[in-house]
Length: 439
Image (tube, one colour):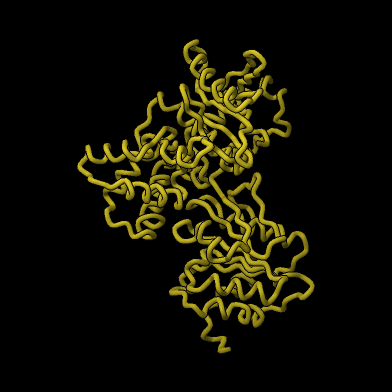
């Protein structure tokens, strides 16, 4: 190999012969971890949520556990010295690595490949490397514009573990603030510290959890920039969307109505009212694109028949409350929807099977396990008005009776209590305390 012409040499030299930055970042892991049991781990998630930082923390853990620095390779394929990245770039990586340092054969080799989707034929290289050497461990990350969970499943044929990285959860937010309680039990719920945690919760509820927002003065400008990046790079460029104005208006409507029911017919009518003629199949594609880019999520109705599920509207949720607030007009009447969106994201991080129920009344969330209903949850900002409490109980009890659930849950801003209706128990809990528990 002609080492003088290999663009990897200066990049790897920076990594091996200078102190790598592997700690002291703003990402606090909470429940995230990158294990080494599987040969391939793919770290995915929305733009700027902390994927690279999680990898750096994993590198620090490996070094602390005794893995030699020489056995860990980190390459960011957005480094301008590697652009444009040709198909042979990864092919030359093992040789370039061994030319610079001595590898310790007693330990596995760890390749951390950031933004690997910039390199042609990356998946074929990974398959070949892991088949040649079972001790090799490869951790890949990529922007959601090109490296998505469905593509990982296709390209790596089910051989990769996937770790989803979202913006901070409430627990991570408190950890960042160095305020995470050591014992978030029921004593905390009724302690003098409860108002403090409610205050932190309100800050998190309105500001969201993107890590970098805690380090800038103008967080709204930062989050608007994130949205533009998602819109252009993760959606328009990736999917080749030609009608950018229609798609932009579609996203504005969806984000204006987040945490509410959405049907293709109503969306079609709303777009027609502002001069856009759009087929329902196109609108369904738009939602798929927004989901692939980790901007929007949808929750279907719980139904025994798939046809019933498909003909009912879905509920739409967004990746981050702060991002939503940065690009839409918000009023105090929206507080309940922000709370519901936050609860959805907490459930989504735990990889729950999430549905909603609607018959005579609506229940916000029905959590299932292997298709079997396990828990019914309502979300309400304030239960102080009798008619509000009656409405929330009606939707909850209807779902509990239908699926023979003995306990139900109502999450609110700050209220606590318990109600018994026949042989059913309804717990009322503050969402901030619930979000601190292991779901």
